[in-house]
Amino acid sequence: MTTRVAIVTGASRGIGKAIALRLAKDGRHVVLMSRSQGPLEEVAAEIAASGGKASVMTCDVGDGAQLAKAVEGAAEQHGRLDILVNNAGITKDNLMLRMSDEEWGSVISTNLTSAFVASKAAMRPMMKNRFGRIVNIGSTSGLMGNAGQANYAAAKAGLVGLSKTIARELGSKGVTCNVIAPGYIETDMTANLPAEVKQSIMGMIAVKRLGSADDIAAAVAYVSSDEAGFLTGQVIAVDGGMTMY
Ligand code: NDP
Image 1 (cartoon, rainbow, N blue to C red):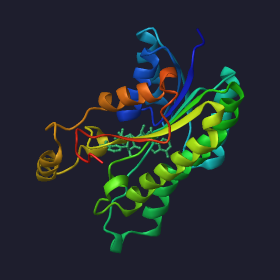
Image 2 (image 1 turned 180 degrees about the horizontal axis):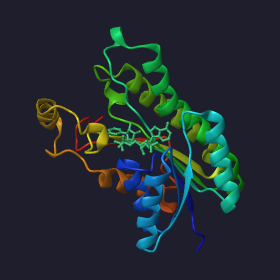
Image 3 (image 1 turned 135 degrees about the vertical axis):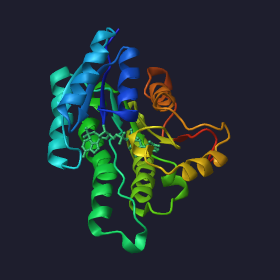
Image 4 (image 1 turned 180 degrees about the vertical axis):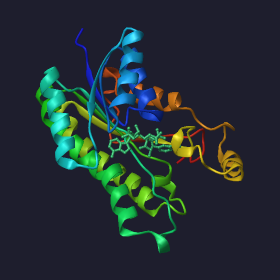
């Protein structure tokens, strides 16, 4: 059996870390990317301790040249690239009237342009092997909009159009592309939400709990698996029944 090689961006903590651990558990060689070497090495050590395979590549996904080089380098180093999970993301929330150009631009660059750059760099090695799974981590904010998140919602909605286009362009080459759109997940990103906001969010969630990073990792594991070859161009909201589109 071929060992599938997977890149996970933003793998140093939160959802990306959970995705990396899960893909490694499923037998993938996982290339862990983020800006911080130390935390990535801890994730790699955790994977190695449970018998999995991982390597570390520091990279700022907001720097297009650096990101393209990292993705191409990983594919070259391993002689293949099967799975790309564009997970790295940031928030810089503000009401639109007060949102600065920097708050807009940095979120678009980190959350959307990075997925374009990394996917473009991944296409060639994927097409060469006639197999690829590109998974973009969106958000229910990109499906519903969210007050204070014009930048973030626009970036996440942009991932939907980008993913459907990749799906159409590469479907005949064995490469699929889907969006996993998490609802409210307990990670550093949501740790500082005020208690009353969490309470009101809970009112919208059918299963009456916030999600875990493992809930998202399980969905990514499926859409990136060999058996998911007929699933492409889809947006799967993993949100405890909050949106139900
Ligand atoms: P965290 O803030 O916990 O982790 C973010 C990850 O992204 C870190 O590994 C961070 O690594 C990495 N990252 C951020 N900026 C960069 C950069 N410029 N270059 C490289 N890596 C970067 O976030 P979550 O785990 O909560 O979120 C992960 C994804 O899920 C994001 O895309 C987010 O938008 C999405 N999401 C999260 C939800 C939630 O409720 N938590 C809901 C919906 C979507 P480092 O700092 O080491 O570089």
